[in-house]
Length: 384
Image (cartoon, rainbow, N blue to C red; front, side, top):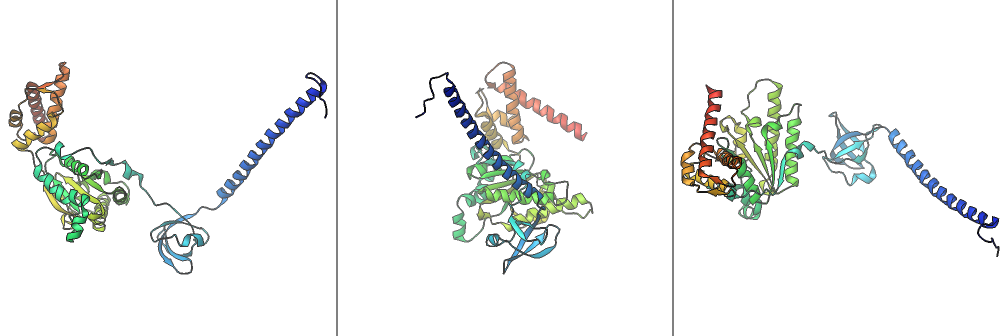
């Protein structure tokens, strides 16, 4: 056995030097292996980037002998070979990647998704309930029959052998609670609520509005049970008039896609459509025929009893003193539900401004009078 001597001797120093060099060699070998691996990956990436780009097509039909009929994005159709490992996974309608040389199917692409559809208001199980809606008992009962029951108990309709209405149209003056009704039905049905404003479906480029409608219904099917609520449907569903303008034709394309989507799904699949409008008189008759929006529900301005109930709904979470609901209902003839809510909010702001933590009857009377003056001022401004 070699004796390296004591610490500080030449032999000892050489030993330590050898150990240090061995450690450095090991580190460099590990680093060289990592760099070699990275070099190989970069070569593969370079080869991949050098490959010619693939084209996009759609499968129309599977043919024998490992071939398929595809439609190119330019509209032409071709019979092309399919990579053997993909053939049994292909289905008509799939989006695929095609070789530039012989249009062979080389890969299956994911389905197209328009992210704009996700930008609309999508609420999983809205917290709104029927108890949050005042003065609309008749309308609630109709919606329970034609929307809630099919979503919650579709087997009842299957046993009888009938299908419920596909679409429900809520119509009436603005601010009467049409959107609130739709949210309440979704909440009571444990359904996803997808809210769309009709004007948002009117797109700038040809075909974009129709594509967006298609994506919205696809999203609704994915999130079933769901309710698609289209507010201001008259923006796309107006009576068709041949004006010859490109904008009107695009609106008509969007409406035709909506009709096609409603014709193409069964209500028992877990999707219901509710629309709202202030102008039912200008809607195209094609929207209102049986099989589309075949149930029309009128949502009127609240009467005395309904106004009292609406005040009770909006005041139940507000700290109040000596409030008379009967007097409030008498003071607000012609007020909509939205205007009554605004009155309660205005009275609460007055109480906060005056340093109080409760709302009095005087606050509410003041808010009603102020709101009535504001409405009259706006009316005279626009219609004088």
